[in-house]
Each structure stands twice: as C-alpha cells, then as structure tokens.
Length: 87
Image 1 (cartoon, rainbow, N blue to C red):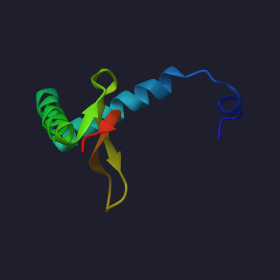
Image 2: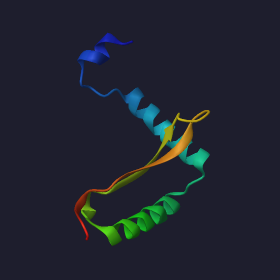
Image 3: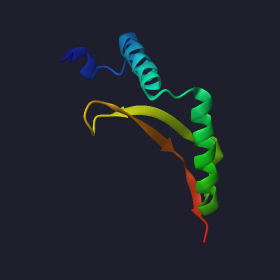
Image 4: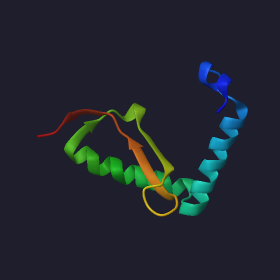
C-alpha cells in the first residue's frame, strides 16, 4: 500500500491510465459499440419515462465489471435522476 496515496487527494496518471485500460477491456469483452450503448440508453429512458419524470441533464449510463460470478463479467450501470413518479 502506498502511504502517500492515503494522505493525498492527487490523482496519479497511472491510475487514470489503468481505469481507461479497464474501460477498453470491458468494451472489448462485452462487444458493445458506443452506438449500441446509446441505443440501450435511449430504450431504458423511454421505458422509465412511462413511469417517472426524468431529469435529462444528469443521466449517466456506462459499462463496468462485476466479480459477482466466476471471473469478471460486464455490468451496465445507469444513474438516472428522477424528478417524480407518475401515478
């Protein structure tokens, strides 16, 4: 463990590079193109908007990995702020 890292708020370039490499590997393993991810995002928003009002300015949809199963598998993470639920 790096002691300097614990007491510093500085983000190291090696950590940024490592995160970028992980993202590239996730996209390659999941075989998702950016266009495909946008189509998924659009479909998710369309379905959720039937049931809730969505704040469209702060929506984030990304791919990551999960170690929940054997090995690491791709996971889709969506952060969609909801204004209110439709009744």
